Length: 444
Image (cartoon, rainbow, N blue to C red; front, side, top):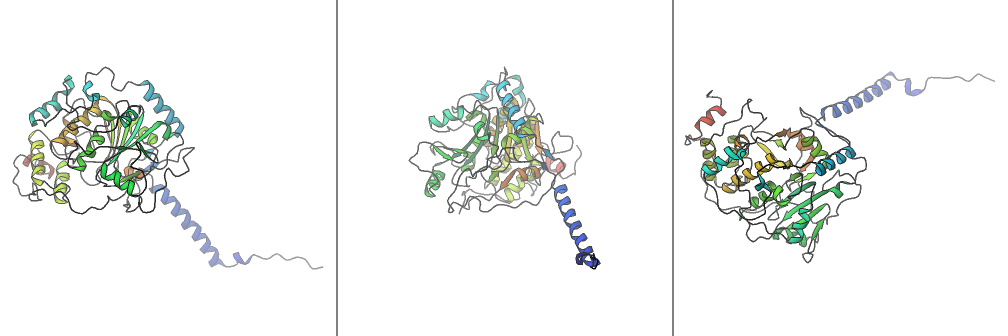
């Protein structure tokens, strides 16, 4: 019998083929490495026991996932680390059960009832509130208009004594989208509340998502709270400002809250967000930085240029008022990385400072317009006690929420407009000092 002969497999007889395989695996390894090393803005995993089934099944005609806006950023300077879901859940439950948020502070007006204080305030009076509120002076805090909701909704909202996630759709401006990445116990302990008006209810009924005959509405995670059109503002954006900045008034027993614009879909569990961005940072509020602007005046000019608010003369008066009363451009000496936030996502601990900030900012928005990025730095820098604020990287915001475009609408408010140049024509002496500092032409 002849001896068996062993030969080199054909696969390894070609040096070129071996080199190609080695190159392929090296390229795959490098691709995976760089993907994970650059995508370092947040480190997280899904909760240990995540909700697997869809929270709600929409009819195809509703199109809740149309028009998503792609993001281009994949990394940031300050990565966010999420702790274990069950540890976070236990810790926040203990904080909500054992910590008295307001304590004995005399600023008790911040949790008052929803009666109207009526009327606007003069510049002098609003400024004095900003300067002297730490002495215990009362600051009227919404509602300047009533906020008509049903008694059953009001009772349900008062029962939210921990974490609440709030959004709003007025004038059918957005779609209702379900949060993703929730832990198995999150819906048991978190209130998800969406405020809507009559027009939005009609559209939901048209798509057979709800029945208008029902006394209470529930769509997946969201409790739908209908706000009667009567007594509301004419501007839908201003109506959305009420739940956005007066959450502590609408949910008087809640300890933490997350506001999310309806154009966003939350993709991270709210417990993890509150814990990582508020609790671990020991702050009153967390909000994203603006992706481009540092100075309030940059945002004001963009607001006029892109017609985000039609009354440009009103914008000019607003900025002149702030300049005259001490608004300064951003600089590295300020304890904040920017003067302009992206306010689509706001996380709060319902503390004295955050409630006060919300009240004061709401007063400015009611007095001028609902563009909340414009009075943000003015109120933040002037108020006492100071707000302990975490302004996180915009890349973090883009990875915890998916942004969609608003529902397309025809037409807009018919308001007499001035030149969109705002202050570029040099006609504003009250803001001249601000502009010179912003442009680096003054060192005073």
